[in-house]
Image 1 (cartoon, rainbow, N blue to C red):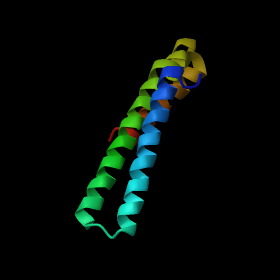
Image 2: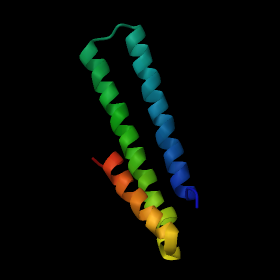
Image 3: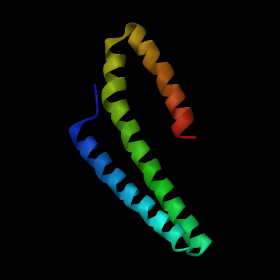
Length: 92
């Protein structure tokens, strides 16, 4: 099914911000900034990535998984197993 256009734009914006955060962390390391300050930025980047994961998971549920479940049969069975695995992996 793919990623819905509004979600795709949102994800690309989020990833651009994360890229900027990572570049900022690199500069902080080069400048030998205070370790707790760098760690705080790592936490912020990690949080931003987790938020992006949740947006993509919501897209998958709303579009891809819903479509497969509506079709029924083997694709519905497969997507149910996939969803359980995704929840265990990304929402634990």
